[in-house]
Amino acid sequence: MDYALLNDVRHWMMEKALPFWSTHGPDCAHGGFIEELSFDGLDAKASFKRTRVTCRQIYVFSHAKQLGWSGADDLIEHGVAYLTERAWMSDDHGFARTLTRQSHVLDPTPDLYDHAFAVFAFAWAYRATGKSGYRQWLYKVFDFIQSKFQVSDAPGFWHHLPPTGFRQQNPHMHLLEACLIAFEATGDERYRECCAKIVALFEDHFFDLRTGALGEYFSKDLSVPAADEGQIVEPGHQFEWVWLLHQASKLMDRQFVDPMRALFASAEERGIGGHGGVLNKMKRRGEILDGGSRCWPNTERLKGAIALAEIGDQHAYKTIDQTTRMLMTRYISGLSEVSIPAGAWNDAIDKHGRATSSTIPASTFYHIFLAFAELMRLAGALPSVETKFLSGAGLKASERAKENPVTQKNNAPA
Image 1: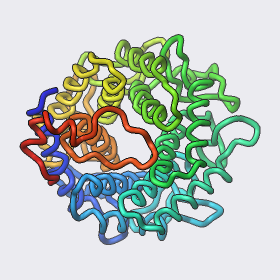
Image 2 (image 1 turned 60 degrees about the vertical axis):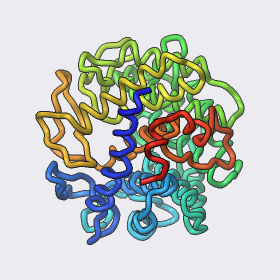
Image 3 (image 1 turned 135 degrees about the vertical axis):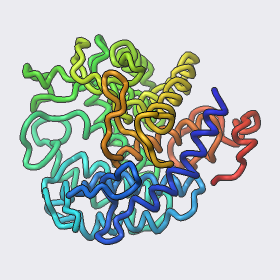
Image 4 (image 1 turned 90 degrees about the horizontal axis):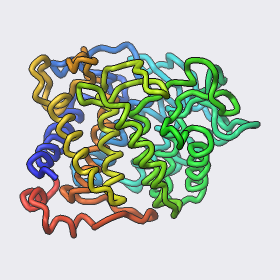
């Protein structure tokens, strides 16, 4: 691994990005967090705020706190107050999907994606602080999901209420992510059971092991619809599932080596564009639907490669270095066509590799921070977050640090 590059990543995370978003991200007037910034670092004045963005920012600052970054507590509390006092409509209706800038309900639709991220946020906040109120909200939101979103005559959950359109893989994936950390934070068997059910959906319905394709949209019975939507594949989600299956293997005491490798190989073979980034969208047979590359699919490629490295695939380290360099040079720094504030990013490139973002979406911070935290954990360049219930893979950070020049130079968290 390139330790000079790792040192740049660590410096950007802890000394640039966290200070930047702790200063520019909160909406101090109306609560929650600002949706997007302009490239001069100012509020881009979006007319709405999505619940999921506040959830993601709570996660970032909770994880940062566990990595030793000071100043996170007030930011976590600020986000939680917005969720519980503004975004939560009632025990019967859950969270609104979007609010106005003034924090009035704009779209009251209960969305599984948002509620999954709320579970994720409260679990991380409880894990980082130990505050019982955050744990109570974690249970409350999970109970709402179980009682309101569960499909009565088919496996899985509705994507929003009332249900319309095709059923979706994506919110199930994020509910798995949320339940993994919820179990790790609490040890409550309900979260382990939910993880097992979602992994079963992946194996039985979402993923085709023969082709390596992960579907996005499904009929009510989770069969592949004949409509065009049934052919849509997002390579970024394939990489994301590689990492999630690796995490689930620790929880479920079983291996997912074959689907992990099939997902990764399919996304690598068909899902990488000529610009070197992960394609946004394609069809099951490989036809490109969107040849651009947002930042987030590349962070998921990094996480997927880290997962493969941890199960012994040595070739994954080359992908780790390549993808990290791609993120740092094409999205975070080194762009000649866009001036990016320190601690921020360009969110997208087009099919020719040209930067296309007009604003800096706050939602991307979750993707970047988690991927880089995983990279630093693998390298031992930041203190590992203690796990209470999941069995970790590989050496502890303290053991890896003995041979790691990054840790030797930076032996205390920023």
